[in-house]
Image (cartoon, rainbow over all chains, first blue to last red):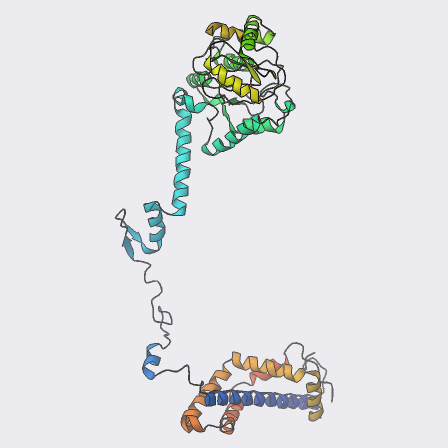
Length: 364
Length: 88
């Protein structure tokens, strides 16, 4: 509570004030005494005058109190208007901008490399989407990606697709109406598609000769995997081609005769050959008949699939393409050997007969 | 009465608190540096070796009292938490 707030009569007030004043003086005296003791001790101990040097130095470092100058006497924005010549580009740069400019000019800083990479990536993107697809044939297999960053993602998702752990139920076909959709197909499609609407007919045609091209239901994008991409059937590919290029569309490519089988680990090449003969002759399903119309495409080999079969995630290997579960191979194809080895690693649900016997006919 | 008040203050620890408060305020307003400068002069006058506490006190106290710190009185009075003077 404050003194002023108290209800005081006149004389009491003055008395109180004098009292307060007395108390105050006492306190001040105490403070003075304290100071004296402090100073005296400093003097006797010899540290009282420590902060003072000789007169000359004192003058030199005296505090400056002029306008436009700091207390040391330095002009504070002295370097603001100065310009430096860059040793690299020989330009005159303002002093405060010199360091960042040098970083970009020499291309050595952390930021500059980041920007450069980003620019490169976007440039690649632009040029790639316009360039002829045929040229990037070899690169396109499973590697074609919409953006540079998505490449890594795509490859990663590819890897996951083929692991033996994947349950059968997961291997559903994409781009098919009414398919049970899991998250993976979504993920897969998201990064690896292109929109057919943006492409001209020539581009579409060239795209379709090298890539799967099946349009995903979810994203309306064309599948960019190879012609033998495991997620889509030949039937789908053919349908897409018809849809995009008209009924006279070029048929699906199929260079190497690789076909997948269900869980059929190839025990013996001979048995396989005989089995192949049998399969070649029979046209099993109606979807296969559709695909039988497809003609070969010289560029990529493709693995046919039946609709009923769950889609198998297989990366196409070297020349022959990846084997599915087991692959039924046409005779005489060296790639078939590789396919055998590939297929033995994986057990797949039993496939009905492959759907490209007619294509093999062409080759045979 | 004054003695009673003083006693009360000391008992309550108010006195110490006020003292500290005053010291802080004096330093803040530069009174302390002023006094110190004065001390320096005195010491230079008297010579470094022979200065005694009494010398300083004699010199400083009147000056300390005299210098403009009366404004601090009211400041001290209106300091927050100051207890009312009880005895009358």
